[in-house]
Image 1 (cartoon, rainbow, N blue to C red):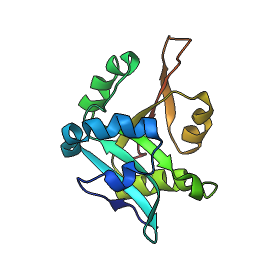
Image 2 (image 1 turned 180 degrees about the vertical axis):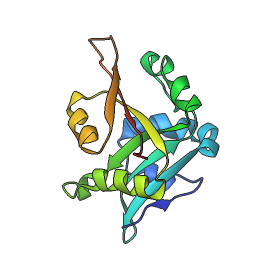
Image 3 (image 1 turned 135 degrees about the vertical axis):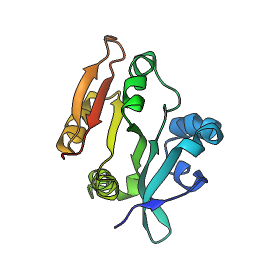
Length: 151
């Protein structure tokens, strides 16, 4: 199963996303698409999983991300956002497989991402990411994770 780059038209990927995610990315995609790539897995014609790799600051950043993003962009880290597995295809480790395929395709690339659900910490840690920062907002906690290839 290989990653497929969807090019500049992300509508087929956006359609599998939850509606609130669609609202965020569809309204700004034209401003971001030149500095981002959408990679997906497909089974027949269905997109089963995918995510967006931003080569600059991602959209809709929180105050926490605004305070942190520049150091990662300056260090040539790419941001992973909107990683999503279609509910019909869950339970097949597609999220982990997507991250692994991304690392294989771009073996020298470092990544950063933000999570807002504590339950995702174990998922990213088992996929080689390391928690490097936690927001101070106890009501809406966020964590920044990074991945750096071993050289």
